[in-house]
Amino acid sequence: MSAETTQAASEAEPEWDPEAVRRHRGLFRVIERRRSPKLRRSDITVTEESAVKRAVKAAMLGNAMEWFDFGIYSYMAVTLGKVFFPSGNPTAQTLASFGAFAAAFLLRPIGGFVFGPLGDRIGRKKVLSLTMIMMALGTFGIGLVPSYAAIGIWAPVLLLLFRVIQGFSTGGEYGGAATFIAEYAPDKRRGFFGSYLEFGTLAGYVGAAGLVTILTTALDDGAMLSWGWRVPFLVAGPLGLIGMYMRLRLEDTPAFQELEREQERGADRPKFRFGPFFRDHWRALLLCMVLVAAYDIADYGLLSYMPTYLTDELKYGSTAGLVALVVVMVVLMCLVHPLGALSDRVGRKPVLLTGMLGFVVLTVPAFLLLRSGGHVAIYAGLLLLGLCLLTFLATMSAVLPALFPTEVRYSALAISFNVAGSLFGGTTPLVMEGLTSATGNSLMPAFYMMFAAVVGAVAVLFMKETARQPLAGSPPSVSTAEEASALVTAQYPRGPLSHLPADLPDDGPAEPETPGDREPAVA
Image 1 (cartoon, rainbow, N blue to C red):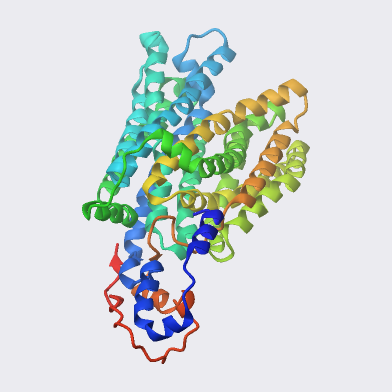
Image 2 (image 1 turned 135 degrees about the vertical axis):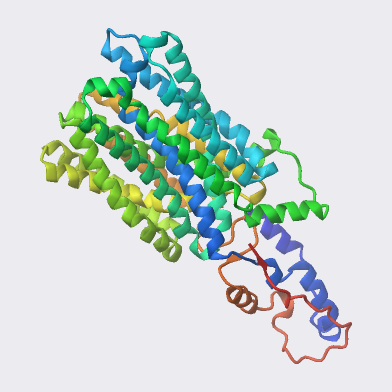
């Protein structure tokens, strides 16, 4: 509710005569309770930690698979160009390979528009299981496609088909996984549990970079072109089946189950319509897109573009660059959970603003360290950028779902995240390379990151602090029944009756008993 609406409602409240309140205290208590109902223990969701951990693992695995696939493709773009496209011009082969890579980004918003509303209508679990198996089939299928030398033009056609399947399914993956964890996690620990989703992001990149490094080191060029390139893609098949099994075993989120119960009780649940959806939520959608743009430019700039930058611009060995990036990502994996827990205590905004300021102040020094060429300096430069990115990784999966109410959360997050990802994330390596080539200034990627951080910082200032608060449209969520009781006990009388003494005689009608002694709902 906006501040203007709240103020108008406050001004519309009747001025009660104190003497009338004194004579009929019970009656006015009933009116006050109807107008400002108190929280009851039965309104609070208690989420068992074992259920939260199962949900987190299932969501994390899908996110790890998504970035494992994108990491493999970006790290093996040159090899895949030679396998799937006509020989002759190596540059044309690489560009064609990156063109198929970009096709997945073009399909992601379409997947968001399809899977988002579907997740709000039939449930988060069903849609996430579907996106998981589609993503696994797309990745596994690429590993089975014959080379251009074997089937000619059908090789790039089939490659493009499976990339389209991957991109379409990915459109519903991150938004659904972030929603799933946020709606399962207790309010006081949403940052900690949400950080596991980005732990999956780093794990996917580390797995891809590590596997590609091992293969390129152990195999010669002939073996890589013949069969070695297939290994990382074929690994996705078994992982997808495991992830789908884990997700199907879960119940849907407590917040979505509450929506279903309200519908069973006859509550109106309108169908998703794009016009009202964008009209009612455009501010939150715009805020989400700006935050995602800043996040994606930093994320893709470091984790996807940096190996190319080290090799092409700084003439650093490709294998050495991948190893350095893997080491930095392992360090980030060790720190992402503590920082997510810290955001639960101090808030999301201070952590995010620290990261934005870090990019503004430290990006140019980090790139200068990279340009110095020494191994220690390169590791130090990558680590500086990684620590700034860590503030995004630790908080974003808790920040973004909290921007939207429960009934449209999956739709809004899937659409805004993937539109911004396509416009800014998928284009980041291309923009950075283009700026560097056009200006001849190897610091242009640093300036691009800094600009994104400044815009992101402005968005954070407009963002509402959501740490330790219930999600919009969802009841409070706690870890134990004791916490639920404490929330109820901590409430105090509100409104015009709060100033009256507790032992004031009551000549009015008896106040109906509040069912506050009922047990809280358990997820």
